[in-house]
Length: 68
Image: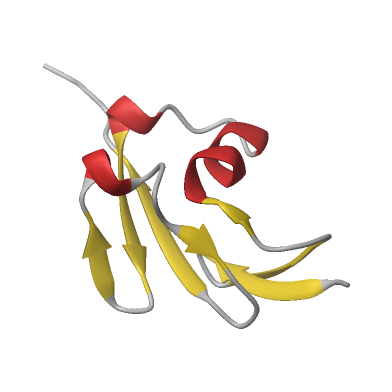
């Protein structure tokens, strides 16, 4: 079963629903340096391992960049 999700405006196909932490890892995101919005709601970092990304979900992932 292929599911379609949207990440930062890009359509992505996944083999099946998956944990948000797995999706972030596969795509090279460091959970300590990002913020995630799922279907318009901010996902608290402590909930990343509880959230399952499903068909038609929309994610916005923002990376924090330090500077000085």
